Image 1 (cartoon, rainbow, N blue to C red):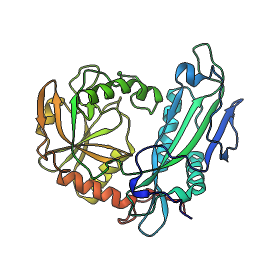
Image 2: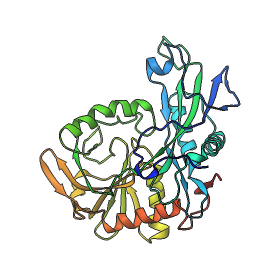
Image 3: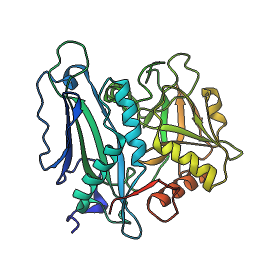
Length: 340
């Protein structure tokens, strides 16, 4: 029985649901994990996560498809990315097979919160892990907690998608050989001042350039860039300090296999940006956010697709990928994890 929520007016915020998953790592092993109704996390005042920011997270969604199934989109890739993040942060790996099963278990336990098809809303899934025992010396924690909660969320863009205005920022997102390629909580903490500063200056987002030379496009604080050339190719920046977005990787496959486009991952110089026909940001929350204008220290680069609508190629990519997620278009093998 679906919960009595106003699905059409949900925002992108936290709504407490019935169950969440918890597993603890102690003495070199993960326990069996449980589903619990307790939404509170109780840890030592000296917990590793509070002292030295030893934490990481993932984000994915569950959907109701056109034929009424509840599905999840490529959760194995989120599990794989979290494994890589944990290795880099000296945290124990929560195996991706267990990760996927935990996602399935939590979504099933909260099936009444999965928004109905056509509402524009989805169930956001947040797996995360943190150092939970007392650590006063600078070193990895000895104990960890892995958790997953879910929350129903509305569409990222209320009232439809509108192209955004972004600025080229002087802040750096990630150092070469740093942690830009993993989903560590600390990356997002250090991006908060930059995004709030952008908002105060009237911009929607930041465009980060590479920290070493400031000549190549990296990403924004929470999304990868995709560019469409005048001859209909998809180009996305390549860098060791960019987070490997699952949405971006999926869009590249959609471009090649569904739309017959050439999809290229390569370093993208900032001085090329003015030559692209369409510019977008991609990620789990919005899928694709079109960019209409990029401001480089007062100099405006107006993207040819304009400020009114998403460009035609990005729209085709968006419609195809969301069609796959919602079950209207046949998915590549292994992309859709059926839950119920």
